Image 1: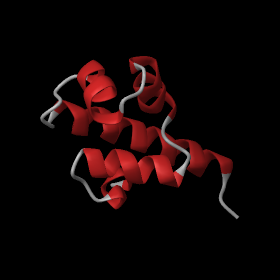
Image 2 (image 1 turned 90 degrees about the vertical axis):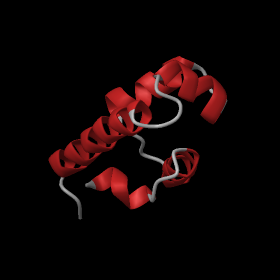
Image 3 (image 1 turned 60 degrees about the vertical axis):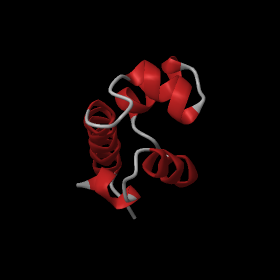
Image 4 (image 1 turned 45 degrees about the horizontal axis):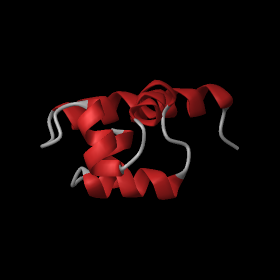
Length: 75
């Protein structure tokens, strides 16, 4: 069973990596990634960065849009 603190740290890491990946991607900004990459409101992307992404299907879609392997979000 996963420790709650480990889960929080993992979600934080996902959010930090998402922010870095967006900045280094063709989208460059969270707003551009939200509207032109994921077709969601930019508040959703800010929430993912702040709180992490806890749904694997969403994480996989985000990774595909950013041309990343979803496992890279855990490094």
